[in-house]
Length: 194
Ligand SMILES: [Zn+2]
Image (cartoon, rainbow, N blue to C red; front, side, top):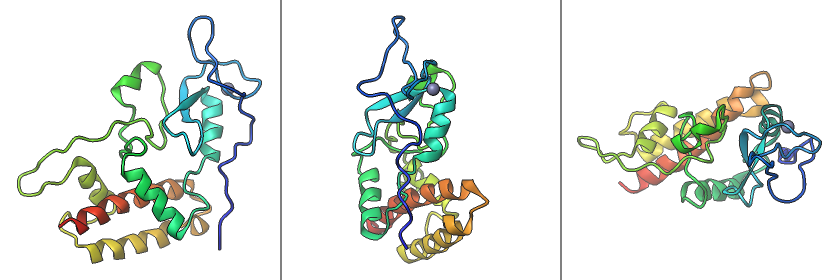
């Protein structure tokens, strides 16, 4: 069953480019709102690198509506995950908070970590795992030595466990599932490269 796309936003977004006040500050891009835009959001699915700014209220609405992977299944989902992990869009990290260069914008909810920089490789004693790979293993509750088959099995179990249809009362399950999807894409590549 295909789930409904929910990438549209309930409130209207002002047309055109990001509005900047006379004082050089971003203004919230929600129609009718003139608060300061303190929170960045991707412009749209095709332009993840360019962003517009919302006030706290509107970024919350945006986040609750924006569901990058929703409605995507099978091939399309795989394609998006590949895209997400081949640096066609900025890297993601797991809940690591704002990147230093954004910190001066104050409170920042980078729910999907679109604006983090790619990780640099850190070498560990006997394994050349990147920090990202280590996080992915931890996130999927796998030992770093898990093979491709074990990774796949664990992934299937987690997807089942965290499926939104089974977690209607737990909105965090869906976010966790998104992280799992990305972690899986990383680990699958890692395991294949062994
Ligand atoms: Zn606003």
